[in-house]
Image 1 (cartoon, rainbow, N blue to C red):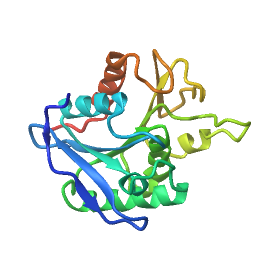
Image 2 (image 1 turned 120 degrees about the horizontal axis):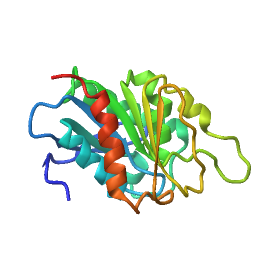
Image 3 (image 1 turned 90 degrees about the vertical axis):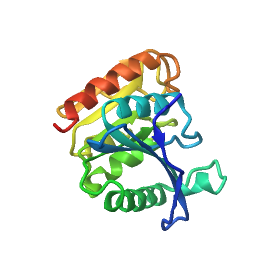
Image 4 (image 1 turned 60 degrees about the vertical axis):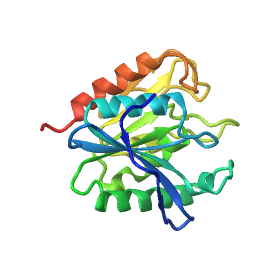
Length: 208
């Protein structure tokens, strides 16, 4: 369970309706902030999101767990990608101009949320991208989503279950792939996830 200093959730207006940001602050001045999004049909209590939040706080990063407008409105079916991206950008720009002004941003999330982070990283000037269970290969022989990973333009971590039904991206210059026990849910080994995220954040944490 997270024991950090968590503020009341913020309702933030976006072009697609209100989004909700749950802010978690480290004990001292934050070195940067990590914005994390949920999966298509899941919520912010996914074990890998909780673990990543705890690790980031311990490393001195603030965390903004962000609910897309369709989830705030009580819907489970995700909005189209362009609406997800636009709402994400609206929230990031609001927080980046307010509570986290002047701090480096790492964008991330699990599954669908990881895709949103990848697609918007360049627009937001993110310093890095953290992907949990990136859904590389969609079903029914649709095109791979590898171009989304390749387009981030910044250091990227992918934490992927060894039996993820959506496939396994390969490491590449600027892209670290941490293979952990489990499947797409990333529920099996939180210790392995914590180690992967912690080591990568340590490398990408600005000096005090």
